[in-house]
Image (spheres, one colour):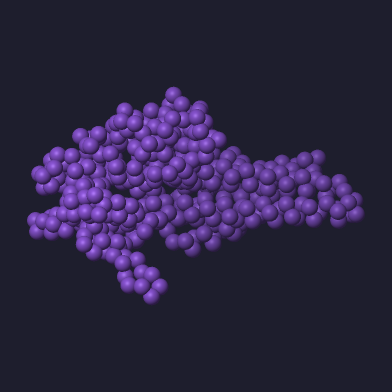
Length: 450
């Protein structure tokens, strides 16, 4: 009977010691206070192990909460089993089994410490308090203090409540406040330096401001610096430049902005032997915030598949998709995180006119939702009516990429005196490349009026 009572006390209070039971009750009260302030139910704190999950969820650390709850569960069960085994074993048997339980408890304790830090880091951010509070959270006898202070004091208020961020699901819609900002690129130069070699200028003096909701064509001949420019814009290869998106500096806040900029390269990056839905779900788990629930991930994946017409083939293997479907899947992966800026390098490569048109119409929808879409394509005239603006890069006589034009499509036709975009490219290409060799003339002409 005594063993059963001990087991029950450990099961519920995590201990059979009176003093530690009192500490556990205070901890439960602290969890209850945090849950109430977060908009959850106070009595969730009374349910063993589930309270750890709910505690993590209230701190915007739901994914960590599941593991945290399991660690607490196995830790308790391990102590119960260890207590029972030791009580019924002989001394020689205890010497045999005790090291096993010690190793298990040490491993679980280390895991507990790691996930306690992860869970309470959410509260550090949520309440805007100093990280030194984590020390109290890690000590068994003081872990109830932060929760009681934050939960009971009116001085501390969470930035968000459960009932608020539970409703926040990824959406195609961009908040109206951000639609007035956009992308601002002020690039002085992009250079490379070789060993004992002179500095080589790849790009120079490129300044553009692109508002939200615009679909922009990036035009230029071979070697004009189109890929170098987009790598500078997305922060992959930094230039001597200031690049801001919605007034946030992509270079200085790169880690925060990494999923605000979606970049779709020419090459395919998915596994062939995986389904469309699994490919997108795996990508969503990486790209969406850590506290995104499984339900929200599934909803976002289905929303993106619907936008890009992939629902009918969601269970198909990637290797069985058509060229157009593969392109749309590549775009869908980048679109999962709801980027404000979407950059695509020849997304229509290898597609026929009909498939290319269908793809660009999807991109037009993305732009119309309040995002910026920037595209490199070698066949622009078949979809030019879908673009708002064009950036024209050209190599000057020193073979440095420069800005030859930026404006809307009609202005570009008037500026170059050409009806087709391919004709514009031909006019700025060097003579040895089969062009008209007028790059310096147009670069100078554009600089005069800007």
